Image 1: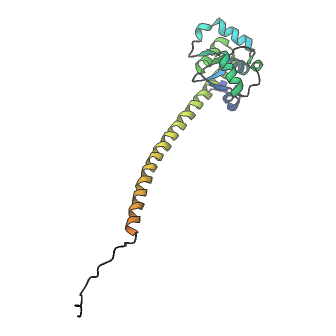
Image 2: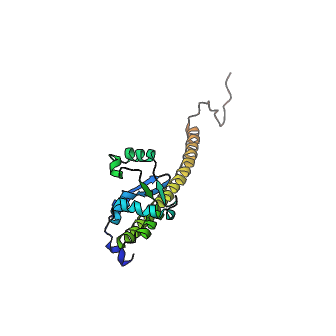
Length: 179
């Protein structure tokens, strides 16, 4: 990490709590980014509108009314007013970095780099969990095969241990019967 980044004192948890999963992507809302960058949300949106060509769909999503309603219900956001009272922009990690380029403040640059690092850690965490889940699934398959094999062994043992109800024929020398 560079020396400049040590000036960023935002706890990772704060950033993680501001990352949402929308349209299959991890994104951050414009109002949250404006707060982190130390600018007013309206100024951030103005800069985005002036530089709209820098924000393709891979970088930024303009949320629909339905998505905002879903966010309000699922994320315990009490009202649209807390989202700015409008349909917010949501920025992917690429959009977060592009915002630093158009805002051009030292804080925006340092904060963007820090946010990207958090996105990368989050991705690594997800990939690590996927590996663990895959290994658990493989182990579970092995164990389920073992269960069937162990059950077969126990069934065979039960058959061998079961008392035989047949009358046993005696072996050895037989005396002739007397008449």
